[in-house]
Every structure is written in structure tokens, then in C-alpha cells.
Length: 391
Ligand code: GDP
Image (cartoon, rainbow, N blue to C red; front, side, top):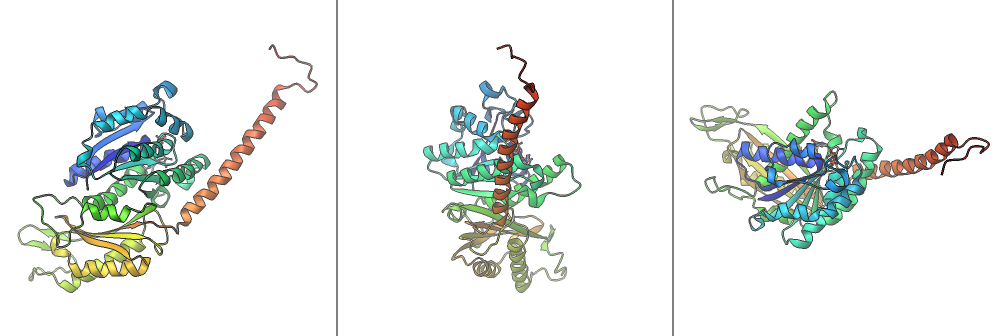
């Protein structure tokens, strides 16, 4: 699947930069075009791979290149005011070669949190191809304002995109990591999970055509209908053996290079279970998922139709969905992996908690603002009102 990616804000720009690196490293060609939008000049300059001419600084008149300081209402305003500048960069994208837009943003900050929904609304008015969002939820330790920003942005962003894929920083944070080091690992995880998924619809001419290859229309159909999506992933290492094809580290049978069909099927079904029941990009109950897509990726010797069919059936039973698609994505890599895209999930306690904390933060902030006015008056005014201000 070929995407036009727009990284909005710092996190968004960094993640799109990682996607470009992933494309280069794995020869995936997912990112047909990349644009970064920010109100902070330094963040734009810090990117490695997004082409310089596709970096758009917005809100210069208002914030002079210094960012919006986690004020997402201001983020939304400047995106609205400078939408033409963003459009100019998008005009240079050959959109007829693109299957969809993907807007990537951290939802807890200001620029991306406020600006992404504005851009999504704009793109949907102009283009007929789908506009997807990849929204990053802040860690619960980031504090009230980030949670409030994320909760408000989430509500707005879901409404404006054709589907909002969510990644929750909170379920991926590791203790004892520096923030930057932690983000580097998290970003790697984001890119790997979504990379395998979007890469599935993009098998090159010189690559093997799979028995039941996933194409971009299957990804689009799984995402269509809107709502919120999450992605599960599990992989198992297998050994590549250059002289005689491929050998599994697990079957370990050097004498007989034929892979046992039953083993392959079992491996696939257990990977599908691990992917769907393990850590999802957004933790949720998978029962009630509206649509799902299963992508089995790895050397073609390790993929078989029976495994995929069994995995698909199992997903149907677990989710209760009648719309579970599935297929292969053959790749000459030393691992077999299962990616599960669960689209239209609704039982998501993490979002309910986020909203609860956001409401509490909002109430506290209103209270503190009211109190601080009173306290300031008390401090400034003399007790007996004997002093007169100058004017
Ligand atoms: P903006 O530039 O105003 O849009 O805000 P940022 O993108 O800097 O931050 C928004 C939120 O994104 C933060 O609260 C973090 O939760 C998250 N974030 C920031 N940097 C990264 C990153 O590199 N990776 C990930 N996964 N999340 C990040």
C-alpha cells in the first residue's frame, strides 16, 4: 500500500522519519511521499529523512517558530490559518499514485494534537482517497494537560478521519529508560507493526506472488467503516540458509529440507493467537471487533494456506466478526510473523480511563484558575484598601 504520510508535530515528524528509514532498510516502498508540519522550527530541523522542501513551518506570525507549548487549541487555530501552506507541500505529491493519506501525531501535545484533525477535515474535503490517522496516546505519567489534550484530540480526530489507528505509549513504556531512548524503541515498534501491515499490499514486481497475497484494497476495506483500530503482532525467528533455501531453527532438520506442513500450520495458528491476545498497540477487548485483517509474513516456505485459514477462523470466533480477511506477505527475512489489524474496536477501557482523568484534570484546572484569581487579588490588594493603583 502506498501512503502519503504527514507527520504533524514533533512525535509525528519523528515517526514519519522512522518510516522512511524502515522503507530504505527493508525495501518496502510504503511511503510514496512524506511531509512534516510543525510550529517549532527546531523540531523540523531535527528530522533526518523528510525532504527539506516538504517541511512546513506553520504559525510563524503567532508563535515565531517556537511551538505552541502543549496548547492544542492554538495548534488547531494555526493549522486552520496556515492550511494553504500545508496544501502547497501536499500539492507536490503525486496523489494519483497514492492509496491513502496517513496523518501521524502525538495526541498529548499541542501542534499535532490540535492540527491533525484540522488537516484531516481539509484533506477529506479535497481528495477522494481515504484519510487515516495514526494517533499516539501519551503515557499516564505525563500529567493532566497531556491527558486532557489527548482526550479532546481523540474525540475530534476519530470524527474527521476514515479510521484512527491508535498506539498507546503507556502500554509500551519501559521503566529505567531515558525518555529519548524510550521513544526510540517505541518508534521502532510502531514502524515495525504498521510497516509489515502496510507493506503487505505492496509486493514488488520481482518478488514472489503469494498464494493468497494481501493487496491494498483489503487493507482499505478492513479500515473502511471508520472508528478506531489497534494492531497485534507476533513473530518467531527462522533461519535463512543460503545454500539450500531455508531451514527452521525450530524444526532443525538439516537432513530433510522439506518443511513439515503440519508444523507450519501449527506455528502459524499459534502466532495468530499470540498476536491477537498479546500486547496490542491500543489495549482492548477484541470481542466485538467489527472487521479484522490477518497478514502472515515471512519466507514463502513457512506460509501455507491452511495455517492462514485456521488463523482466520480462530479470529472470527474470538472477535465475533464476520469480516475477517487474511493473506500472505512473502518476504525473505529470518522470521515468520503474524500481524492482526482489528478495526472498529469499541470495548476499550483505556480510552474510558483517559477520558475520566481528562475530566478530572479539566475540573482541577478550572478550580485552580478560579482560586488563583482570588489569591492574586488577596496578595495585591492591601487589607484596608488604603492604596490607590496609578491608573
Ligand atoms: P507537538 O510537537 O506539540 O505536537 O507535541 P509532541 O509531538 O512533542 O508531543 C506530543 C506527545 O507525543 C507527547 O506527550 C508524548 O506522549 C508523545 N511523543 C513525543 N515524542 C514522541 C516520540 O518520539 N515517539 C512517541 N511514540 N511518542 C512521542
